[in-house]
Amino acid sequence: DAGVTQSPTHLIKTRGQQVTLRCSPKSGHDTVSWYQQALGQGPQFIFQYYEEEERQRGNFPDRFSGHQFPNYSSELNVNALLLGDSALYLCASSLADYQETQYFGPGTRLLVL
Amino acid sequence: RKEVEQDPGPFNVPEGATVAFNCTYSNSASQSFFWYRQDCRKEPKLLMSVYSSGNEDGRFTAQLNRASQYISLLIRDSKLSDSATYLCVRGDSGGYQKVTFGTGTKLQVIP
Image 1 (cartoon, one colour):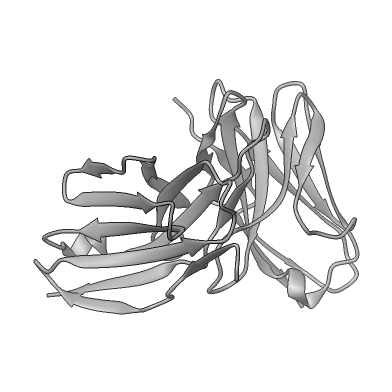
Image 2 (cartoon, each protein chain N blue to C red):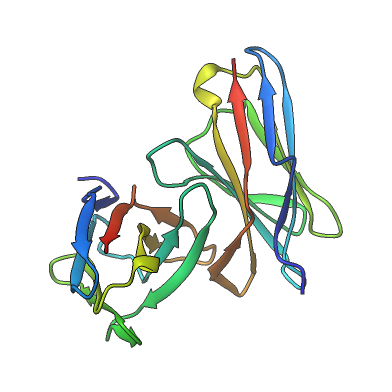
């Protein structure tokens, strides 16, 4: 049973660039949530996708956008990167009816120079 | 008050000791709570769910106090492998589950 996978594992970008991170949910899961975790902080909720639509969003600017595909996989896009966007980006999957139990992927470490 | 607040620690305890963490939350309407464990440079993993009556899983006991708006995690007979950051998580009520993480409490179990 494949767990949540994310790619790439590490990424280095420069300010102003754009980045796309990818996530494949755990087999059988239909809901994907994205989190940003800065060093020494807890994960901060970015948004959640279900049935290919964003249905909840945290306090993140419009530079952060996403997409969910028919196979439930998801992408997180960040435009106009800032130094402060450097963080671990975590994807978590769950079942719509059991969203309380989320399974996290290993994350993508993004460094913005 | 922060939505979910934890003492960042670190808590340095000897093997075999009992250690307890508290976590306070600000939204009295919150329905569910969880403890996640995060090892260094790894993803968070669900440790326990905490419901109204609290629950126990082996050496781990979680309690919920709605009146005072806090949850606790008790670890008995600490092992070296318990060293990690413990994240308190609040699940909001409503149709779409949104969870809010605390900043985590770091535990270091010393031989």
